[in-house]
Length: 102
Image (cartoon, rainbow, N blue to C red; front, side):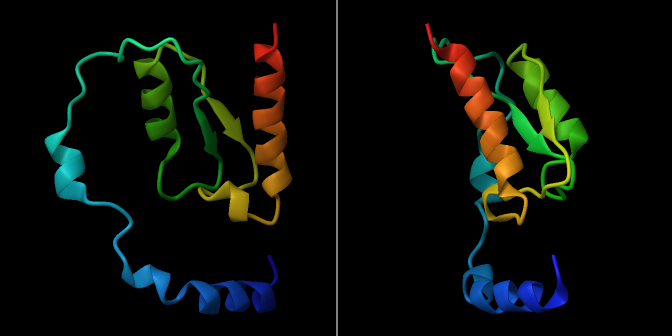
């Protein structure tokens, strides 16, 4: 991403960055989760190679918890839908969804 675009996005996000991302106390109170919830919903565990919020270890731990293989999208950041290369994440999701078709 070029500097001009980065500065533009930073300016747009300045106000929202004053809000907490999530409540860590509430999250910690719910941990550890002892077992996989009884759920019939298909799950995609997907992360991003340039993610500085959920690292590769976090992605792997999540996938292990659900007994799945993680999918790591290369060259995008945590909020991949906002990344300049957002199509990579969208294609990954689309490919996964197409495999669910009967």
